[in-house]
Length: 177
Image 1 (cartoon, helix red, strand yellow):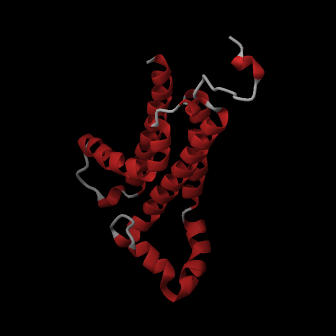
Image 2: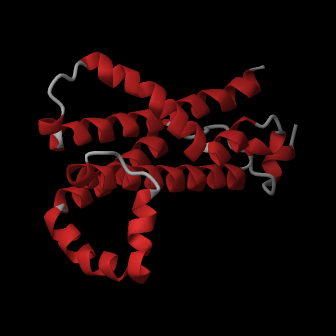
């Protein structure tokens, strides 16, 4: 049982980090678009956790499945590195999509849906390519927050969410009894 807990505790820390990133993105979204929301209370932010749980379960699904499978190779260093890469990839995608929403909402008054992909694809994407430099200049703060959130989540993951008992299968001392 302690071996199972040694894997499950870092898993919950990692998922907690994903919830923290989603909450920070939600707060930033509210700060930038506050004029569109007049009667928002703290309970609305708490209800947003339910949406975050669904989004995290879909976006981080490969990471979640590979984190909870009950096999001994979960302790291998390469496997833990693979989990970290999956987490960073999912986390970066989540941050980018949330920050696109920050700017996109002001124009459409709705969150990003599949309409965004059809807009990008219209005319072979030429309009999107033309507007991209203006987007970068107008929403420069998104990129600062993007860098901060990716770096911050990497730092927190490395410092607090790592699995400590990694097994190195090719090191002889691990096989000695």
